[in-house]
Image 1 (spheres, rainbow, N blue to C red):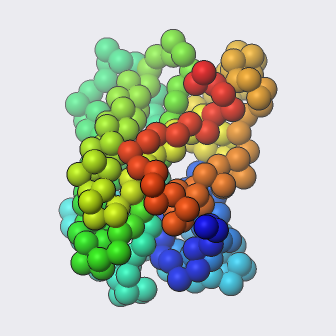
Image 2: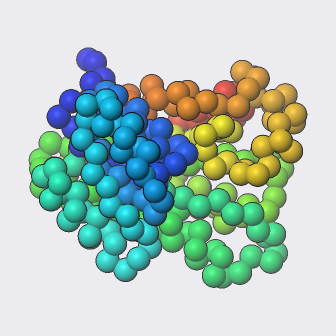
Length: 247
């Protein structure tokens, strides 16, 4: 079974930059049309996707805005009429001292990193059930250096996403809906430890068996696999793309 995505529509959150940008482009290169949701300027992604011959529609909105999830679904269905793939890539990574973390900072991280992904997934699952032929959900999580601190909200929210992945996979497998997560390591294109790459370079490279930071294309194959029919018997797993760091 090949991994072409022609005729498929992918809804991708957090796609204006970083990992979401490259994941959306990877799916377009395999034939998927893309509906992008972000708060940033996605004109570069639109140009890149249309250069592949695929269609790109976008909607600029924060997923934490009241009513945003419903509006996103309304716009996506108006543009394409159906959805086959959901990529939950919208996230924030902010450094806070754990004992000084405020409830406002906690809620801010949890609202976008977990709640937005969860409720968008529920809306998409309802649509998959209406369509009657299953669908794919791919969640993005990340890892932090061992023994690091000051990323409490981000680390805990990633744990919640992984638990959510397993739970939704278990409950909706009967509907032929596969839910998986990609656990990203230290990627040169992502938001992982933004502003600290040089600080961590030496210690991290000695702990990554492949001996380098990840590049844009290193996750393309896995994203495409999990979005395609070739992964119809893969669900509920969190797969690391980390050069072996998690070993």
